[in-house]
Amino acid sequence: MALFTDSDVVTLDDLLPFEGSLVQVSSTHGIDVQAKIKLATDEIGDRLMLNLLRAGLSDPQWLNRAKIGLSTVVVTPLLFRWLCFDSLARVYAEAYNVQLNTRFQAKWNEYQQQSDAASELCLTSGIGVVLNPLPRPAIPTISSGAGSFQATSIFAQVTWVDRLGNESAPSPINGMILNGSASVQVSMAGTSSQAPIAAVGWNVYVSTSQGGLALQNSSPVAIGSPWQMPNSSLIAGVSPSNGQIPDVTVACIRRWQRG
Image (cartoon, one colour):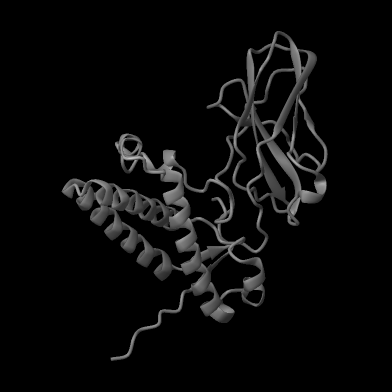
């Protein structure tokens, strides 16, 4: 699972399974869906942070929480749904305010109710955190030269790996058109000093099609070193993972009003 602070935890494509007409509605009424996602993410982040600060010793990172923020929070399926439904509620709230269309009002109310329900479930079940976070890497760099690999295109995706074999959420996919026989090299973006503290290396997933990415290294590639594709064919390795799973679930303290 991705970390809450990873980039593009929720995108327009993630909202389409819930609402197939979203692109048409947003484009027709000039609604910036990504801006609504950011507003939802910011507000939900504030609520998560408040609950973690209230959690006290049930959060193993409580003493450092104000410093590390939400960088160790995992986007569990419940939290992901909360983010999606809250984003959709904001889209249809604006659509209704622009058009005063009762159909949009009904959608707004529906998604707001689902957001409230997802919020309740998420906070009741607790906030998932990891002790050694591995942020999603930036898009990798692909370079090519003279070689014997025969393909018209190549695609690559990378993940950070810790000493226990845990992986980050996969990076965005990069691709390159190849002109005839070639050699291919994939590198992590940035410098080795920018690697996460918990990372001991990285994995590379490569394919000649965007949908068939497979692990190519048998052991983690050293931080700061590129991966060089062998002259033989690509390995039919496993697909990229979804990222880290929570090490701890932090119980949220519910404060009831007196009266």
